[in-house]
Image (cartoon, rainbow over all chains, first blue to last red; front, side, top):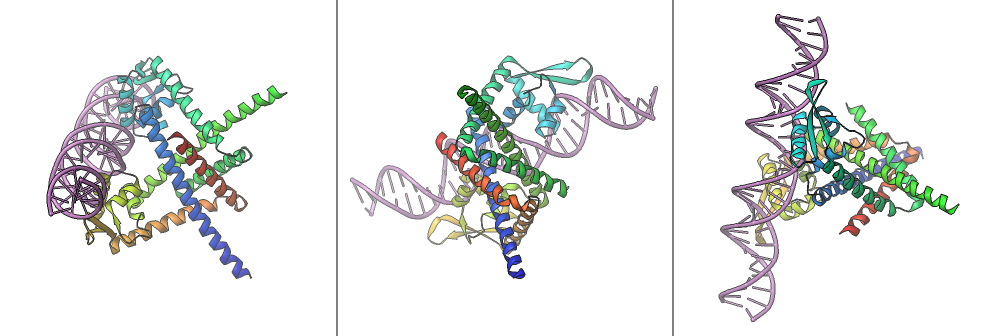
Length: 159
Length: 159
DNA sequence: TTGACATCGTTCATAATGTTAACTATAATT
DNA sequence: AATTATAGTTAACATTATGAACGATGTCAA
């Protein structure tokens, strides 16, 4: 009986691991497509959109901070910022306290763009929420929290 | 009372929409990092890894099929297949029934590589499952299913 | 059966995303 | 004062991806 049960347990684990793999992969693809659509809608590269959104709650950011938040090399950040600057969405100025540092902030046009993107994202996620049975919403959110911590735990284990 | 309740409801919806946005974005980032690590571990570009995995359950695939499954332009598929061919992991042959078509299949080395990657992915997701409280596993999987259908519903609505 | 049209794979030009390494200028430390 | 570290820039390169043009082949209707 014990043997039978443990065999079943192993099967369940296998099934669940595969299911997890499949679902996570599908969610990831959905997100990829979503980001790509968003970039097309705003006629701007994804990296620049992501960069703009970093300024929520920050008046100024430095290049190094942006590279850190975007998780890219600082040389990559330089280029992204340069392109946003060319489009008039951010501006660069010298940090008065440290001549090595450049302070980057949104221009008024950049602020408008950020608000537009925020509204787009918010309404998209409202719509998504609307597709979920109200009785299940809390459950889905809690499950995602669980998944996130588990993924982070695995990541921590591996490194 | 009704007014107060509906105000609260709106607040809850806002909170949940933002929470969803945040969680989905974090999961997406986790996945991105995972794919990048996997590519480094196997010393192969992500696109080539993804392409190899398409052969699970297929002896032969055509270029068009691969482009469709990877959701890329056929010109992109050509290049990916070419690189896998150079590495000796797939081989191309003429379709005897249609001279326009090339049949692509795994070489023995390709099959070994696929098994390696499968094992890697399976053990990773076993590990992930192991991080989730057994009592919650079914709940998490169901929540992900719900989320996936909701995301697909939104996608369908938008197009 | 032949002309029009569609399909498959390839090649090329181009764009976006990203890294590493080298370099300049400045700041901090010893 | 010399060394070391940090911020930002630039250049070379890799990866991922698209779209247009093209050749070879297949399909179908007049």
